[in-house]
Image (tube, rainbow, N blue to C red; front, side, top):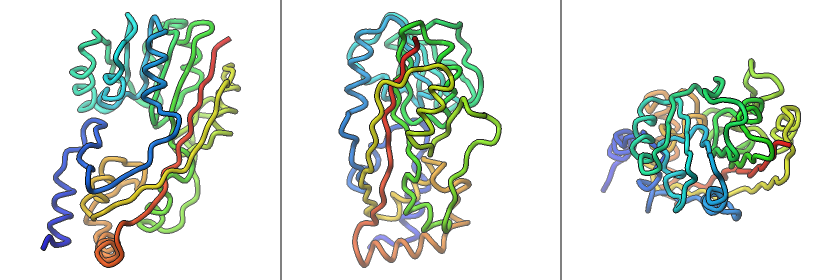
Length: 260
């Protein structure tokens, strides 16, 4: 029988680089949004001449498109992911720049006709508008307010929604809501043409999956370590062993905006 300590050790040993979630197969599940971000991304890429993927992770989602535009660029803030993204996107001859999540984008104004981002930590709407060409489009799937709140509050207790203290009205962070994102996009001078939102069921089948998830998706329990949360992990392990999967809900929204 696999023990609590065995499972915790297993979840602690899995590398967190990149944005590949295939390790969770058979250990956790999450519903996918009905709009199909990867499908929308692939469609938009066929119509673009120059595209930028902001906070690309390891470039896995962008690398999945069957046809890329002639000019492809991406940004990523975490050095291990930058190296992975450069490998994954080499087939598109993409430029991958190491850029902080809140920093200005290192590209000229009016440079891209498509800017995309899946689950950005921060959205600099002013910078998105600056680098877009006239009539260019921004397409993004974002983490909504209260995403996986059930797990966060089990581990940490009741939480209040927080905002980044220094970015002002032209930026939103992971955990924003569609209304805030729309307001920030419009304040930056973009026209929002589509907004959709959904709550999606997640199931965790063992505590190893919980440990790896919290190590990989760092905003769910900021500063998470096994040692700091061992007691809560043990309680959750016992629940899963006796009652089956632990259920939480991710919140996602899709937003598409256009530069006039």
